[in-house]
Amino acid sequence: MKRSLFLSVLLVFIAALVAQTPAQPTRPKAAPQAQPQPVPPFSLEAGRQLSALHAWDKAEEQLLKLDSSASAADRQQALDGIKNSRKRIIEERRAGAFAAARLLGSLERWKDAEQVYVDIAKSDPEEASHAAAEAERLQPKLTNARWPEALDDLALKFGHLLLIPSIVYAIVRFLGTARRSRASIKFQPFRASTDDAAKQIAFWLESTLANLRSPAPAFPTWPGLKSTLPLMRLPEIGDELELEDLEVGGVKVPLKQLIQSIAVPRARVSGHWYVGSATGSAYVSVEKRRWFRLRHATSAEQPVASVGGPAQDADLRRFAYAVFIEASR
Image (cartoon, rainbow, N blue to C red):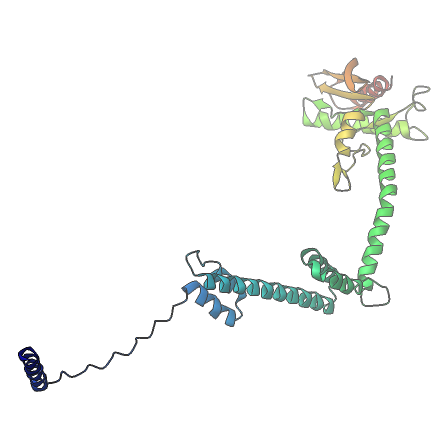
């Protein structure tokens, strides 16, 4: 009984103590903070902005810079952007190529337009049939605006047809020139101890040759000399036997060097005249051809009066005849 009374009194005391204690104010619960949104990488954002500006090359370049540390979603967006940029680049280049070809066609630059269509067919298989159809419309016809081009093609074909006759003509001319050169006698300039003597001996050689070739010689000649006289090529008045180089198919044929190597003359004549105080001496040397080389064959020497007059003229005339006789043997 006493124990129950003690517990009741204790409970009443505790309740009174609790009632006298001031209530603590309750704090309001803090609102939950918003999670920060993830910031996309700079290269991805730059690629988006450049794509919006239709700068597809630059956008592709920026998207390719995205490294492997980016999230899977960013990498997928970058791949999609690269694919779209590449598609747009191909479309723009294709449209630009066709526009350029049409512009060249409107300017009647047909060959250039055809080349553009050929390049499109090679680089873009998807548009090969379209490019071939457009190029087919540019085939040359004499009835349309491409007639100058068709005439150029005809001229080119005509030039190809003339190529063979030109080669044949060059060969015939080369053989004829070589035959004439090998049958000729070449004279080197005769030297003399004075300039006046050099002019005199050159005059008498030319005068004697003209007399030998004349139908009615002014001076008597030896029997048979005129009929067997070969081609004489005197300095400065000889027949021109040189040929220009021939170009065939972009390859130059050195005809001039071939003539010098093959067309060796039948003989080569050289000489000199030493004018003395009363009587000088005129000398002639003859080289004959053996195969394709010239070798010394014969020589002759005659006295010539040094004082001008009929005697000197007669000596020089006899010496000129002797020169042609020695060269013609």
